[in-house]
Amino acid sequence: MKVLGIESSCDETGIAIYDSDQGLLAEALYSQVEIHQQYGGVVPELASRDHIRKTLPLIQEVMSKAECTKSDIDGLAYTAGPGLSGALLVGASIGRALGMTWDIPTIGVHHMEGHLLAPLLEEKGPTFPFVALLVSGGHTQLVEVERIGAYRLLGESLDDAAGEAFDKVAKMLGLPYPGGPHISTLAESGEAGRFTFPRPMTNRPGLDFSFSGLKTFTLNTILSLLDGDTDTTKIDQQSKADIAHAFQEAVADTMRIKCQRAIQQTGMRTLVIAGGVSANKRLREVLTVMVEKEGGEIYYPSLQYCTDNGAMIAYAGCQRLLAGQHDDLTILAKPRWPLDQLAAL
Ligand code: KG4
Ligand code: ZN
Image 1: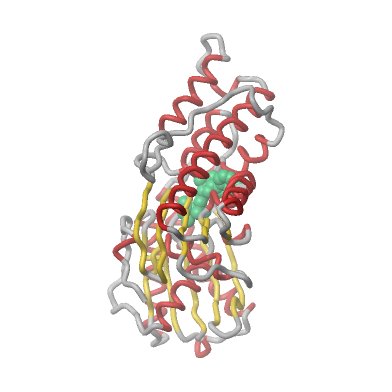
Image 2: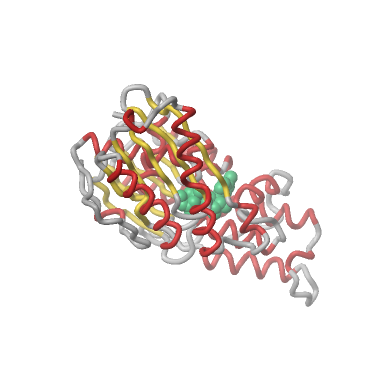
């Protein structure tokens, strides 16, 4: 079965064709980063307007790369949520309308299920069941995954998502949006031990996260170096690197503690990490060491499938369509959509 996937939940237009027999046939990704960078974050209205411009030309490009015509496509998958409502509506309207005209089964995919299943695009992917740490710009969740669609939420962030915290700290340091990759690069030249940041919510039981206190701690640390000036971007370059280092260590170590707890609590031996922040090298290192100590295995997507992309949506949609699921003609756009409300396969 060949499925065309459309991702448009935030600031990336991602299109891909996944074939259940041959794997990924073709893909294209257009990032809106340059449009939003001057505003220091995603401007929803500009995002929708750009998805409108890019979606159909990218579909045409991917169809031609895969040497497919419309009669070769057996199913259509689009991101139905969660995400920005205007942005979602673009992919959902185009996806649902193409599904109707091409007369093929069509399904609205949960964006975080897309992330969660992305490691299965790899040649050696995880086998079910596993514990998944989903870390993106909008979500930080620990999920017990029995099989596709059977998700039990073990814990989540009570305030900022991990990616959001990376982006906000980056902004304080005067780094461009999205800040995660910039913090990661800067942290490499940071001096270990100059600053130690707290590991929030690790000294009490439970699997929830909180990053807003860590963000405030970071801000106060920066201000303490500034002698009354409130422009946080003015601290010297070495201090920026040292702060990026301390912040990244605190996030990675907090996740290590929570993931270890989740593994021990569920008795599962496999940890999957996915979502934009799973591209973070240090986080991968810290979690790999922990999982190996626990005698388990860790899986994460290759870098291009950590952040938003069309391949993960085509893949997740394909699994559901193969199981006989599909939607009616309603265009689905759900800006809020709890992951544990999905139907299990
Ligand atoms: O999954 P994603 O592409 O979009 C959402 O679904 O939100 O995640 C984007 C987030 C951004 O906050 C970005 O700063 C973060 O992932 N990110 C990283 C890295 N690469 C992307 N955070 C830390 N280290 C990275 N290397
Ligand atoms: Zn995402």
